[in-house]
Length: 119
Image (cartoon, rainbow, N blue to C red):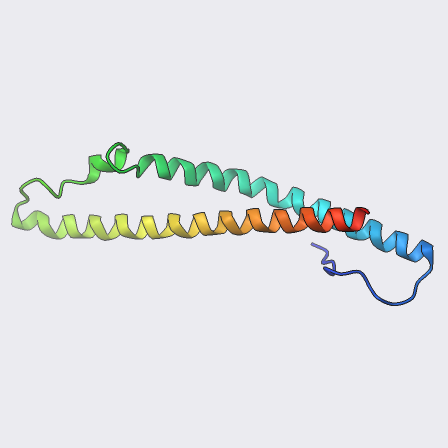
């Protein structure tokens, strides 16, 4: 992926040079926005599915929570292992939510950049 600077050069240039630089910056912003949109939609759907699954008092996660039931001694280790796994999964989905927020912020920055260079 070709990188593009986040500011236009300050060197004196002809009108034609400036026009070409503005077009390249605009094209770069459009390309980045398009690139970020694809994984953003997938990530959003994944995060929303997890939120529905983990919904307190109504999500399917309750199916796996047997902490209120009597558990035999040999099942305690398995229950603790399952709890650690669920805790790790929750941590991963927390990270995915953060990545989604970062992608949204990047898309907004690209949109602002695109507006700035299109004027």
